[in-house]
Length: 73
Image (cartoon, rainbow, N blue to C red; front, side, top):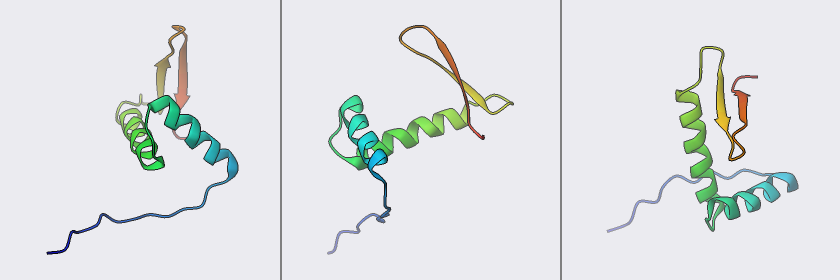
């Protein structure tokens, strides 16, 4: 019996993106780029599902400052 492997996606990133992945590994407390991407996609899905009619979402930081983010521009 063979184990079915999940599809694999390969892409090239620049040095800035690699540095961001490393930063997010630490922030999210994970060890792999895949784990970072899963969390980032989950956050993006949450934002997309909860955007207002003007395509914005708000995030309140730990400093209690609200930041509005435009999702489509």
